[in-house]
Length: 74
Image 1 (cartoon, helix red, strand yellow):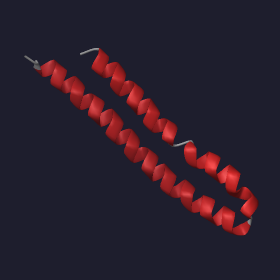
Image 2 (image 1 turned 90 degrees about the vertical axis):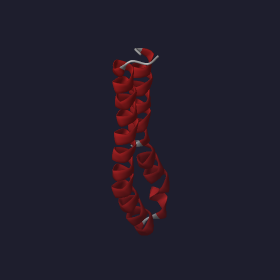
Image 3 (image 1 turned 90 degrees about the horizontal axis):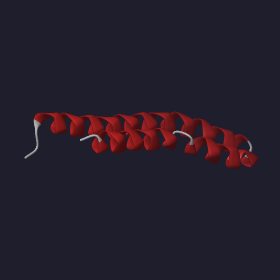
Image 4 (image 1 turned 180 degrees about the vertical axis):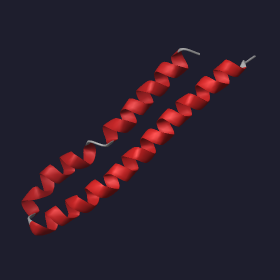
């Protein structure tokens, strides 16, 4: 039987992943817009732009780590 505390921890883990994914999506939207503009001006900026597009994904990985830590404490 699952108690209320475990349910709250599961909700917290879901919120951690959901909000970090939302934040990464919003960040990638702005970075992607700037990257397309930079590549349009100078195609040599492609590599730098792709590196900058990957950085917000680390936010989702951190959210996933927090979710695993929370689920491990259940």
